[in-house]
Structures are given as structure tokens and as C-alpha cells.
Image (cartoon, rainbow, N blue to C red; front, side, top):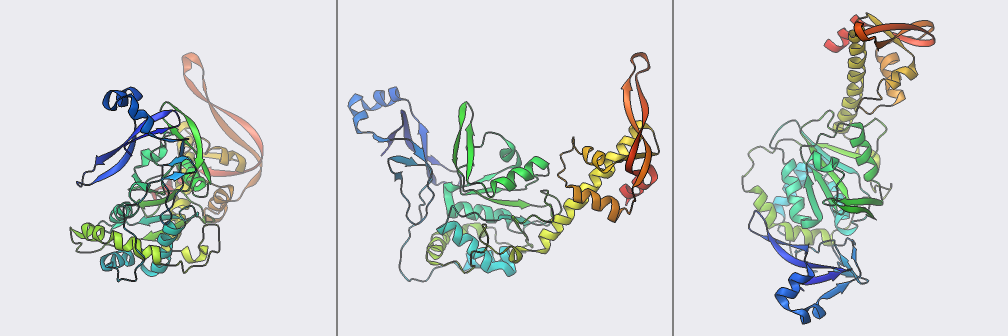
Length: 400
């Protein structure tokens, strides 16, 4: 089946060579006239026809055609058998124990759910370590061998682009060396992690709403604030991965040789963790020190942003103190990319900085352009409950 007609358009299935010498199947648009030139008019009658595209993920009962539609989800090349033979997965088992550590069984359950229930919502898996040679990137590459064209490995800019057709219909969206530290980044990935539908967009083509079942796996060398989350966030599973040590340079090839057997192992394996949340796992069992460190890093990130904003204002206005109400403090973040909450700001000012509010008159400042004189600072009086921030106090905190 080399040529297809899907809807009113013609396509050709081609075998694209990859960098490692293997090939993978890809469907590309093909002009009708080109088929006529190459094959003749009578050939068009033999071309398989479909009503359109669909995406129905499955690894056990995969169907290329679903009710007259062409399934864009890729069938895997692994040969699955139901024999009771021994699986050669010693290297894979060793590697997964390194990645998941004391949560090894949960890690196996995560992979088993991906295999048996690809539409099940799962937590956002994050592998972090400031150290090198830990196996984070190897884990992404291994998953690519396991799930083949149903996984993509992206960069930060790929995730931020509004053109998302290359990843929005994938089972696994890996982001290596991730740094999604903008408010809109964290909101987007958080919302997508539990979304059931998403609008796919290609260049020059209208958006199309499709089912979304993607699972995010983020790898970062930044343990403190590669993404901004608050202490009440329950969608992240963050694991610190230690260095492997003397890693065999051919270790990935050894893992690749075991992929087919590991696929058979997953096909036979049952999930041991009971489903207790919409993301399957008991949130308490996903709590790690790495998650606590990330939450702590987010808190510090908000505090530092507030310090910089206040310091910049005092330098800009050439004053030694500045006063704001709580609502005015929150509005200072409007132009900032940092994600924050009212509770976070209150805790920073009243608990950590131990400042008390006063209910009285206070000065605020504006910069005004007065033509010949240029920019001048004007002060005006407001009344109400407010906090006062001294320049020396802010500078000391910045230098800590």
C-alpha cells in the first residue's frame, strides 16, 4: 500500500532513513498528477481510500484503519508473542532501577500504563540533576526506541512555538535540558497534562481540535527552578538522578537490543499500583525531596523577583523607600514572567521579612515627561493600609 487517498488529498508512504542507519515509515502529501505521470490513470482506481485522518493510540490491539479513517498513531515494529519465555532485559532493569531508585515499582507501573492504557492521564515526570552523566538523556532516547514514532524529543523553543503539529498527537513529549521558567510555560504544561482535547496547528493550515493524550517527561540540569510550581501542585513527579559512574559508551546500544523483549515484558505485566487519582497514582507516593527543592526554588524565585522590582523602582525614582498596598504589590508583577500567588507574596512580606502594614497616608511616585526638562519624578499622596520598604533593607536581602 504505497499510495493513499485520504479525504480529497493523495499521499505516499515512504521509508525515511534515520541517522543510525535504520528507516521509519512516514506519510507525505503527493500530487495526483505525479501519480498519474508515474503510474498511469488506471492506477488511481487501485489507491486505498479513507474518509480522513484520526488518532487512536494502541500498542496491544493496534488498527491502521479505524472505521474508514487512517490512523496517524504509528504501529510499533516490536514482535509481540504470548510465550512464557525468559526475557533478556538485565541491562534495562539495571538502568530503570538507577532512574527510579526506591520508586522502581512505581516507575514500572508508569511504563506499564503507558503501554496498556495510552490515553490514561499521568503525572508530569521530571528527571533532574545538576551533575552530568546521570542517564537522563539516555532515558529519553531509550523511550524513543520503545515507542518509536509515537514519541518526540523537543527543545524549549519547540514547546513554546504555536505550531505544534509535530508533538500534539504524540504519546510522549520529552523536553531535554528544559528551562520553562515563564508563567505562561508552567500554566500551559500544567493544563495540557490533564487536557483531553487540544488544537493542533500547522503553518498555513487552520487549527484542528483533536484528542490529546500526551505525557510530558522533562529533563533538566537545574534542580531549583527549571519550571515554576507552587507547594499545592500535584501534577509533578520529580526525581533526582545520580551519576551512573563509569558508563559503558555502548550502553544505549545494549538497551536498544533489549527493547523488543522489554516490550513483551510490559505486554505481560500487570499494574501493581491501584488507581487512586485521575493521574492514577497516590500523590503522597510521588512526593520526593527533589519536588520539595523545586517548590522551594520557586518560592525563592518569586522573592528575588519582588526584591528586584522594588530595588529598580527606588533607583529609578532616586528615593530611599517606597510604599505599596498589598493589591499594588501584586500589580507590580503584571509585566513580570514570574508566576506567583497572593499567599506567596503575603508570606514573603509578613512571615519571612516580618514587615507590618500601617494604615495611614503614604507617598507614591510617577515618572512624567515634561518636554524640555525630560523625565521628572512626581509624588502624590494616598491613604490606606500599606507596607514600606527601605532601600537598605532590600539591598541587604539581595546581597544575602
